[in-house]
Image (cartoon, rainbow, N blue to C red; front, top):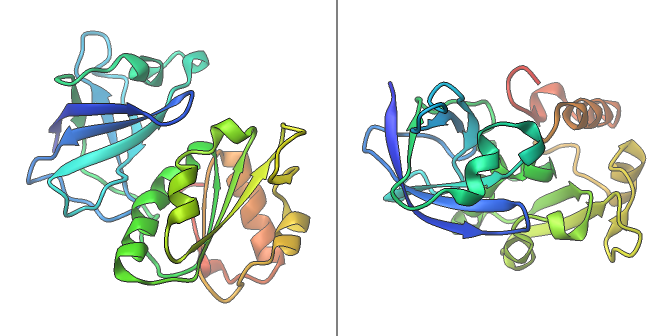
Amino acid sequence: MTHTLTVQKTEQLTHDTYRLICSKPDSFRFEAGQATHMALDKDGWRDADRAFTMVSDPDAEHVEFVIKSYPSHDGVTELVPDIQPGDRWLAEDPAGAITDHGCGTFLAAGAGITPFIAILNKHAREGVGGDHLIFANTHDRDIIMKETWDQMAGVTPTYVISDQDDTAHRKGKLDRAMLADIGIAIDKPCYVCGPGEFVDDIRDALREMGVPEDQIITENGW
């Protein structure tokens, strides 16, 4: 089923990332962490659909997306900075394997944070506590919603920066050695999202560290 989501408000979050607040039809239902394939309802773009994650509370009257713009990809995200209220998205029924499996470690790279926004907000509302967010980026300015994570009750954030020498955060590539140094709970769910290579490397590291396969939560096909 195709759903029409009308943009109500836009907000720039980082130098290349935007929040879109849209209308939500009653038929558009999802779980925290899930995504939808959607296309911009404009000539030349209706067939250029791609997956975007809903970051708002599933019970909210509106639906929100946090989208990183990739001008070099020559795709719909390059249009995101110019999207205005009144623009429409054509969205398919939501789906996805990343959903709430309880308190755990959330490992994200770049825009891979998006499935975790709704889940961590849900945990904060419910007073779950004990979540650990490990968030890898290339530069400090790429950290999406940093103030939110720094202030969120029940979440301990660890930031890993790979390409900025003067960062105040952990410097380097997030790999098994760094995970061991940071310390993770191997008896709780480990959620992983980011570019394919990141997901593969982190999943392998978690397996080697003793995290059970059914406790590693990633998107299907990754």
